[in-house]
Image (tube, rainbow, N blue to C red; front, top):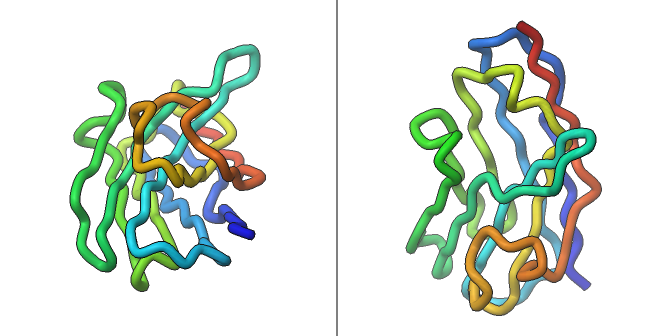
Length: 129
């Protein structure tokens, strides 16, 4: 059974940085399709970034428009961890951030919540102005 555990959330001031990590266990496939989502109070969960890898090689990365140029998704340790480096954080980035795994190879697109089969518990990111 695949398990995802997020860490790295916290509170920062606007302009600051955080690095989220998602530790993946129980996955034996050679290809990896992982995403980071966030959900602010009263809002729907939205896709932030996603990555497709083939072993240790990154094949594709995807970002929602609001984080392009500020956030970077990456894989480390031969698919056992996925990171989200977040720079130039803004108050509107405040949300619970979730890591998710898609075993269908992004067949439903990278940003659809319904396309992911396994989810972590989330880590809170709070950005103050």
